[in-house]
Image 1 (tube, rainbow, N blue to C red):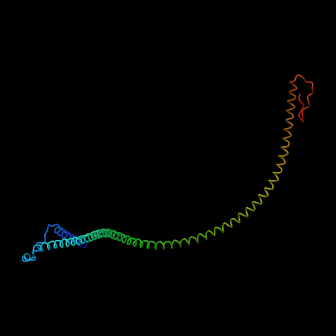
Image 2 (image 1 turned 180 degrees about the vertical axis):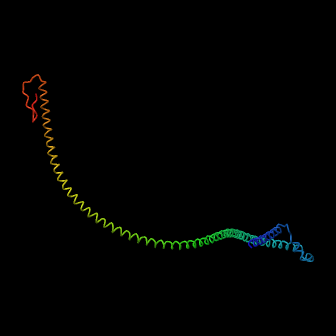
Image 3 (image 1 turned 90 degrees about the vertical axis):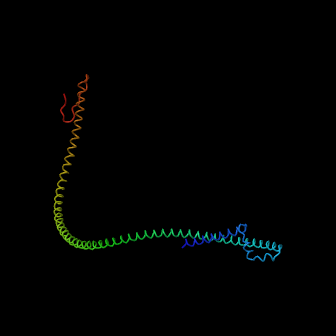
Length: 255
């Protein structure tokens, strides 16, 4: 539709340009239509008019023709400008229509792509529905199995609790018996501890007396060593004027 309108406008513009070219040719003298207009008056009119009158009439007619031609040229120029503006508008409209056609083509391609996506989504939705049905079936079976497992677990928990309560009772009785036995052993240990404490006190007294005796013996041994050293020194000395003191303690005197 837009192409047909553009072709018609182009043809009309070409016709206008051809008419303008013809008018310009008439103004330049390339095409003379005076003979045609004069010929319409007939051969008898030229004989009835004088020569001066004919010259004046020809000049006035030429001026009138020039003025008319100028007016026609102005009108044709305005018409040509209007046609050019119309042609520019048509070209702009054609460009807009072409752009709209490209946009529609892109939208059509996008619509086809969306249709393909919708088809894929429908397929995926159908698969998801089937998977949901399978999942619901599995969920129902799992719920039944879980309920059965819960009942079994409750029975097991009850049995375990009863067994645990029985074990706790037995353990409590065993602990009570062990506590009594422990108390008896504690009393025996306390008695034995008291006896051991008495023995330790006696051993501590004996150890104290032994340590005192050991220190006393150490002193006597030191005194005896000192006396022996003094005796040996006197024996090796060439001067033996002073008498050697008697040996300390219970030891016999030396030679």
